[in-house]
Image: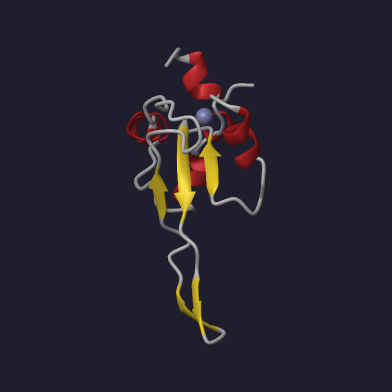
Length: 107
Ligand SMILES: [Zn+2]
């Protein structure tokens, strides 16, 4: 188990749990839930994520997110102009969409 506790390890495996792990960024995120009122969708910020700094179950501090390092690497190495552009991200090799890139660098 690479996670700090079994509760977190289970949570990130479950599809209905709002906590997920982005391995390529080494980042634990909390998804926003859509809000319904009277059966109608009134707010949907499900594309917004909040980054967690500590495990909600055992309180262990998570390792530093590699979001900035990842963005720097893919912009420089693969001439990605905007990491928010899905077409631009097609230039990024598979290795950079997994934890492989940062493990190789020993981060
Ligand atoms: Zn934990």
